[in-house]
Image (cartoon, rainbow, N blue to C red):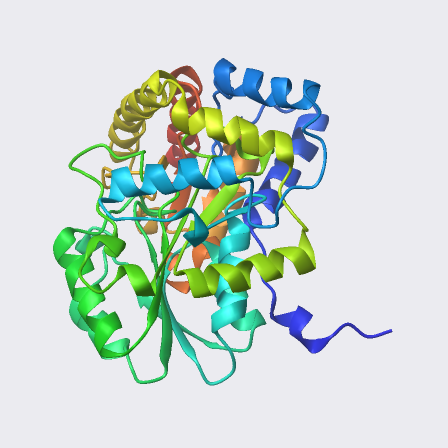
Length: 388
């Protein structure tokens, strides 16, 4: 039997491939410091865990509405209304098992052959994977270090065309930690309106911001009706394994995404949704503490990397990743990934895991303890000294 041709157009996340290699080395007795996976190393706050356990004990083990339980959709609508300064109705909310299905479903619902989709590169690899999967044309916007890993607005404008169906944003950004300014967003909004394009705004790291206030493109005039806000619980509340995310979008599109839920997952797990209600409506102390811990770790890893020969690292403004330039070492991104894993016992990701414009960079996640980060820096420093 032959696979459908479209399967050859699907990409993957190499973070899981590197994790597998690292686990194999650990099975051989090697100690590996994991800086490859974008997952908070904190436990889910206890009040959220208790809400999930309580839901299970109360029999919340059955099907739920495809778009999510009303209580969670209402809580999300209130959260987005308050944090983005826009008016959101629960009918605009679709709850999904993780935030990634929002990428899958909205690109599937809106884009097809002949359409162009503008997206950040380097960027989360599933953007390009899904654009290719549906047969649309991926149009990368290079994110350059000299531009603080923001959109070069003039270059972006040159890429927008009558065929542009969607523009994908991710701010704060994975893998670089870059953040789009309000001026950037205003220019992107203007282009979207002029060319009748939708915007998929991946805001999963909106609470992990180290300076200034978060801005969403949905806040700009005329943009709420053409914006899909992607958000979830994995990063802010350390709930990666709960698989709980959501999209906020115009009602006409939410109805179609809910239909895609019916045809794929049926619904999101009931107990996870009740835990999500508690996450949004309960105390927010633990998420704030987590961000402060990330801030401290950011200082340690950036300062340490900038002391190493061949490394140049910007201080990220959000998320929990650094994206140092390693061209001065003489190694390619993939060579450095392999070198650090096997010679230093540090798992990282090649910049090319995030697209062609990631060449010359590696990504480290600093969602690990300060002690482990310091140990990783010592090992990296010793390993790269051999290259001199």
